[in-house]
Each structure stands twice: as C-alpha cells, then as structure tokens.
Amino acid sequence: MAAALRPRLLVLLAVAAAATGPSCAGAGRVDLWPMPASVARGAQTLLVSKDLRLSTAGSSYPDGKGILTEAFRRMVAVVELDHAINGTYSRGAPVLAGVHVAVRSPNDELNFGVDESYRLSVPATGDPLYAQIEAQTVYGALHALETFSQLCSFDFNANLIELHSAPWTILDAPRFPYRGLLIDTSRHYLPVPVIKGVIDSMTFSKLNVLHWHIVDEQSFPLEISSYPKLWNGAYSYSERYTVDDALDIVQYAEKRGVNVLAEIDVPGHALSWGVGYPSLWPSATCKEPLDVSNEFTFQLINGILSDFSKIFKFKFVHLGGDEVNTSCWSTTPHIKSWLMQHSMNESDAYRYFVLRAQKIAISHGYDIINWEETFNNFGDKLDRKTVVHNWLGSGVAEKVVAAGLRCIVSNQDKWYLDHLDATWEGFYTNEPLTNIYNPEQQKLVLGGEVCMWGEHIDASDIQQTIWPRAAAAAERLWTPIEKLAKDTRSVTARLARFRCLLNQRGVAAAPLAGYGRSAPSEPGSCLRQ
Ligand SMILES: *[C@@H]1O[C@H](CO)[C@@H](O)[C@H](O)[C@H]1NC(C)=O
Ligand SMILES: *[C@@H]1O[C@H](CO)[C@@H](O)[C@H](O)[C@H]1NC(C)=O
Ligand SMILES: *[C@@H]1O[C@H](CO)[C@@H](O)[C@H](O)[C@H]1NC(C)=O
Image (tube, rainbow, N blue to C red; front, side, top):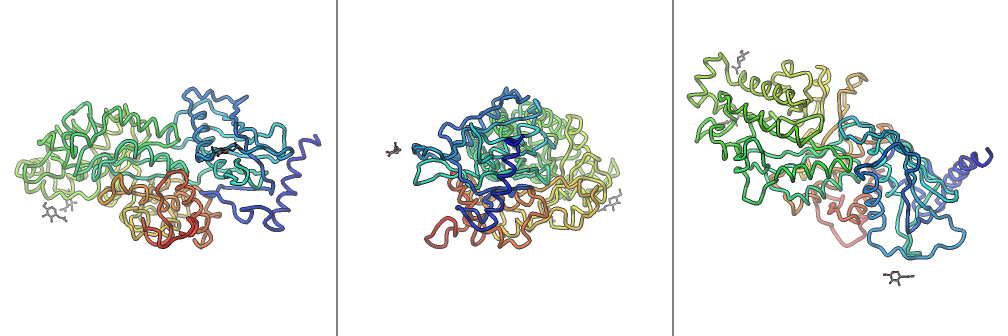
C-alpha cells in the first residue's frame, strides 16, 4: 500500500516544486494545443526510450484494423522528426520505456458522438516506466497519443527525446462533438495526397469532421457509379476522384478519428451537373438551379445519395440549399407552366425541392445538414432530423435551437478561412453558444466548422490558409469554456509554439502575425512570427 501511495505524494511534491518557480524548460507554461480539460504536472525530466514500446496488455480492444498500432507509429515519427536518436542513457536517469494503452470498448466504428475522452498519465518513477492511457474508444486513445507527442521534444545535447515536467495527469474530453473543417474541391481540384495532408494536420489540433464540399457550379470531379456522365463536369480529364479515391479518403480519415461529411449543394450550386446531363438545366441559356419540374432531377439525386451511402458512413449528409436564385424557374416556359399546374410560386418550389431532397437522404439512412437559408425561409417545415448550418452571420444558432433543431456554427465574419482579413484572434473568440443559456438548447449546438472555400486557394497554398487560424477555432471547440482565454494575448505564445510544431511536422502553417496567410515580416525565430 505504501508503494501505491508514492506516486500521489510525488505529484504533490512536484506541484509544490513547480509552484515555487520554473525549475526546467517550459515549466511556466503548459505547451499543449488545444488545452486539455484538466492538467496536473510535476518537475521531473524523463528520457524517452529509443525503442518506445506500445503495450496493450489487458485491453479489450483487438485493434483488428491496426488503428492504434499505426497511430502509435505516426506519433513516434512526429516526435522524432528525423533526428538521429542515438545518444546514450546515463545511468540513473529515468527512462520512459513505453506507453500502455487500455481501450475499454472493442468497437472501433467511428461516427458522430463517439466517446473521444481519455486519461493520460506519465509517472516519474517505475520500473519499467510506462505512460498510461485509458480511453473508452480507440479514438480517445488517438487524442491521448497526440497530447503525449506534444509533451516530448528532442534534446540537442543528448541526442535523445525527453519529456519534461513529469509526472503528468491529464483528463480530457471535447466540449463539442462536431469540430469541422470544410474543403472545396469544385472551385479548385485538390489532389488526393493534399486532402490526406489536410486530414493529418487536423488530427494535430483534434478536429474530427472533414466537410467535403465535393461539387458546385464550377466542376463535378467525383465519379458517380449510378450516373457515369456526371463527372464529365470535371475541369479536366485528370482532375477527378474515382469511387476508390473517395473510399480511400474516407478510410484514411476514419483511421485517424476524422469523419467525412459529403455535400451535394442543391438546387442552387449545381450547374456543373448539367454538363453530363443537360436536361437538369432549366434551359441551355438558363442553367441553374436544377430543373425542379423534372422527375429525372430527383431520380439522379436518389442515385447519388444511394452511391454515397456505400462510401460515406457518417451519420450526416450535407444537402446545401444556400443562395438559390430561382429566377430561371419562372422565366423558363416549361417550368413556369409546371409551377402554375402545381399552384406554386418560386419560393414554394424552393421549399418543395429542399424537402424532397431531404426525404431522399433520409431514405438512405442519413440525417441531413442544410445551410441556414433553408431555416430562414421555411424552418418550421424542415424535417426534425435537420441540422442547420449557420454561415451568414451571428445570431442564427440561438434561433435554430429555440426552434428545437440542431445547429453547426460557421459564421463567415469569424470562421471563413478564405476571408484573409479574419484574424486568429477572431477565430479564437467566436463562441458557438453566444446568447444560448438553456442547457437543453446548448446541447443542440453540435459544434462548429471553419470553412476553407476554394475560389482563391488550391493545392499550392491551402495549408497555409487553413493554419494556424483553424487551430484557434479548434481550441474554442475542444477546451472547456472556463479554461479558454478571455484575452487572446495570453495564448499567443502557446499558439505560436503550436504553429512552429505544425511547421516541424511538415505542415505549411502561416505566421500568426498579420492577416491570414501572411509571409514572415522579418528574419527571426519561428516562435516570434
Ligand atoms: C548519431 O548520428 C549522427 C547522424 O547519423 C552521427 O553523425 C553521430 O556520429 C551519431 N552519434 C553517435 C554517438 O553514434
Ligand atoms: C438571379 O438570376 C437572374 C438571371 O440569371 C439575374 O438577372 C438576377 O440578377 C439574379 N438575382 C440575384 C438576386 O442575384
Ligand atoms: C408564395 O406563395 C405562398 C403561398 O403558397 C405565399 O405565402 C408567399 O408569400 C408567396 N411568395 C412570394 C414571393 O410570392
């Protein structure tokens, strides 16, 4: 029993030591991003074994798909960062031999609402000395490994990895279940390896939904088996994704704890669909929105969503519904007479289209996400399975949850990454629960999403436009509200350090200073840009 008590005593002693003043590098600041829910640490420096072992003894999770083993290997790689780890361990210095991971659930199906919590402890003594991770699911364990990686650094004197401020006890869980990033492959094509790079970088700040705005009016890059001419709307022969590419992206993301939300934006943003199937256009001179009077339009949507249900297993599909200019419907004779036959005006027809598309998505097992115009125009008619995606401005989430629907926040003034004048401070302070005080209504806000619209970015600059601003939003969405900085100046140094960490890991994150995607203003340390 006395032995069992020792670690706790050590924590107390170490905390007391840390409180008396910085006794080792970084002691003044916990350099983790996003900040965990609860952190306690000591003042001991450990060396990390060159052959850090993963132990899963006694775990009820079989790791049949290798999710945990591969994540462990990636974690070691981002800690070692290609340095030669060939120093010698001095006798007597404590060496961390491995990480023991205990995952309680054998189920590794990733979906919305999966338990992402974890407990990570790094004791300062023990023989052998092992860090301990406990999590309900493997996805919580993945977050724990990311946190662990941020505790480690290369010691340039010893040529070894070290871990400061042990013992650590970290209890952590996300504040919101939906923490998204939108990419847009219609305005500019993004090659598959670029998308995978974005997914990798998301895991470093614990984002968990890649919203893939696949198609829009400009191009239709994805193969759809049921309607093989749709990708005739691609920009070029090679700027395309096969079904296998899409499956590959989804599997790659899932192995990293990232869900993929697929979007088709109907009826407005769909001009490119008619390149392969011109009858979807109202006419050859008036090409959007999709022809509401044509049964083929809905058959085709049914085909797409049927194909999607075999690829995209996330609980939700996004059906767009924003910026619908219906003037082609009343200026095209055959649609105009259809409207009259059905006693509909243009806005009735817009509602009819959105609700019919919702029913099709539900028939394929999906809950639906729609952009906020659908709510603003006919919120009381939307299916109760609808999640309203805010983008136009603030103040929408409170109306949506008051109406009993779920909401995702992406107000463009703060969380649109293509707005280069939107600052990281604005990303950090954008609070999804503004003016929402009722706990039941708060639960209806699933989270938020930062949006990397593709009109003015492509593979050449996407990462530096996303980072570090997306990371500022990631902490807002992950960390308990009482632990978030009220004054962003108190997190600048920690975010700058995280930005350098992204650079070290090969992510082209831009400097913090200035606006989005600014170049470094002058020579100097990464930490000061
Ligand atoms: C460690 O590796 C580096 C780079 O390969 C090499 O230059 C150095 O001599 C090695 N040191 C030891 C102690 O083996
Ligand atoms: C809607 O489209 C019509 C024809 O394409 C155009 O003349 C009109 O300006 C558009 N309305 C808005 C509000 O953009
Ligand atoms: C369209 O018709 C509905 C009734 O079906 C009516 O409430 C609405 O005001 C009309 N909208 C327009 C823009 O005329």
